[in-house]
Length: 417
Image (cartoon, rainbow, N blue to C red; front, top):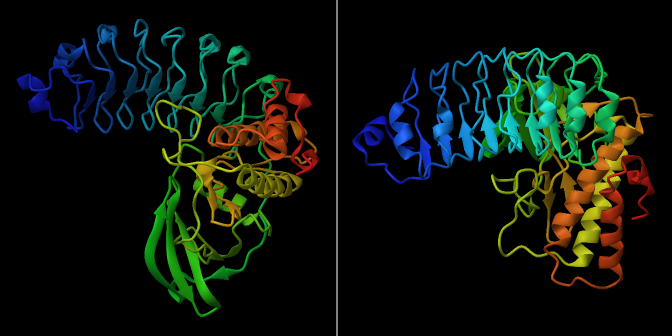
């Protein structure tokens, strides 16, 4: 992070990335002195409510974040022709005018605002791949969005949608969809034993996510250590924390799903007690970055054998079939949400983007099948031995799962793994 003093002194001349968070109420004009080099601008966590009309002077700008400011109208970025990623999470946006975004945008973040409608011109953003829109007040999506045929990830949770539009099922690349917390999302919750927080001996933190923190804990009721997930209760990029909790409680038992043991009693804390997964398990992959947009990342040394990929495919396909039989869409089927050990046993976790639906609506499952195909593609790309019966079978399955004719994709129960 840089400082306003550094910017004004000219010390930052020639930099490509600028981050300023100093309770700013106006856009520092000195930023324009960086126009020849600046590619990433982050003015999040300030008090900005407007931008200069000539923001397009930042001709090299590729990525811009204005999260947690005070904008009520989305500023125009028309003319910022190199801009591909734009974030306005956690503002008070109510207005989104027509034709104000460059057509190169592929990642647009509008989570946690007050938008009631989207402009029809959103359909012109044909390169849009990733669109987190959770936590607004939208009751209908514009028909023109059907033209966003490169859209892969769409977060609609915590809005006011009365239904999911039919055109959405025909988006050929849609893979990661979340829509919980809307009137159109069925409500489902399974009973679960309760446990008092005071009865737990809470130890070290095991990890943190958008919706909460996970701790190692002990209880008189369990001989082995347990995991405690305490939810923050806020709106995340995926939706409401209590919807994630309900979804996690509803998963049922499966060898490739982390077992849910109980929930915290009372209303003071929102939390679940889960099976403890020992540290011999590790993340299969890591979240997408600026370059990959919708696709996971892996360490440089990561490789997978065909046999390992097959074991992961069997476990995850079986878990997904189990979930969809219960009318539950995971919504975030990614390598970074999978834990694996040296024996290739894996767990699918993190139900922050999960949504309930009527089980006979197979179109939901076929969207998730493409996410599974992306997982196979990512792992197969890191397989040195690109030959043999297993590799060929997995490559063919990947092609079927990623078929742009959505209705021709196999269901998880039909994959024959």
